[in-house]
View 1 (tube, chains in turn purple, green):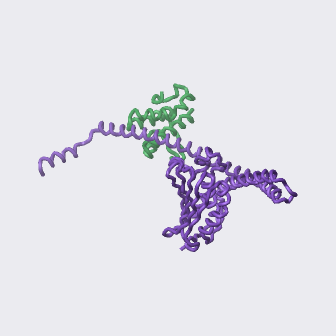
View 2: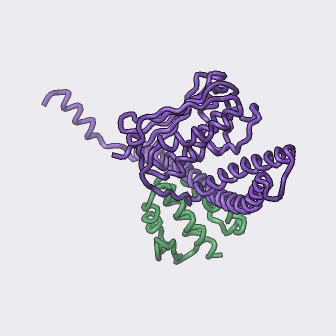
View 3: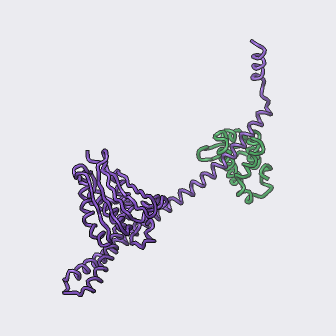
Length: 288
Length: 94
């Protein structure tokens, strides 16, 4: 054995003094005391968080129930307003003057807008309570988009706008999903573009890209900043809607996103910037 | 009065248990006159002068872990101290 080995062996063999052991023991104890205090504080904070969470869950449930009840109650009278307004316009109660017809038309359009807002609120309450049902089946996104573009081109023309539509074949654009819910999304996207465009063209396209169907609506409208884009699909986001004095619940895009994501797809929005138009879209898996 | 001193002892053992683990009960079991009836329920009994036994319990921990341990014991029972006349409190809790 070398001298170094001997020295090392002596050092590790040297008895540790009782005093040193006691010191180490007390030091470890003090650290443990600190740890115990931290643990107690953590437990207290956790309990506070749990209590706050339970309270929040309760409030959220109450809010969803209230929303559902309120919107159901409003739906009935609204249907009556729309129905009677429509009958007056159609002359069911006799001849009406052009001025009266125009006035009743405004009542009809406003109640229609209100009905759409109510529908958004109802959809949100269904989504949040997990009660949104989807009736799945095969359909063509191109077919829906073509129909919607045609229907909305009348509204667009009144604002001096044109709606162009192009697509791949219907067969190429078949997806499996809830046709009515997807129609709602397509309507929402095209209607939004019309609402936020003062002049120019709305371009609607449906294409097969790889194993996805890609739906896009591009407009020459007000465009938006990256900050607005980041929040657009959140609840009550209206982009610059307030400034443009447009009507809307701010829930349409949130509902659209939830519907598309429930179909395992995703939504998108791009814009070059304010005044440079926007493109909204979604992608769904093609039926294989 | 014995009851409150037993209550204090249980509090002290449990507080020490948070810091040093189950060895807190082992050490408590070494204190003369302190009988552990049910560790899980925190049930103990005294055989002898409660003031002396409690004092020895506190000293047992202090022997191993020093003055810091005394502070822990005092902290564990601080809300009960007012309900015990000073002359009946062990020295280590004054």
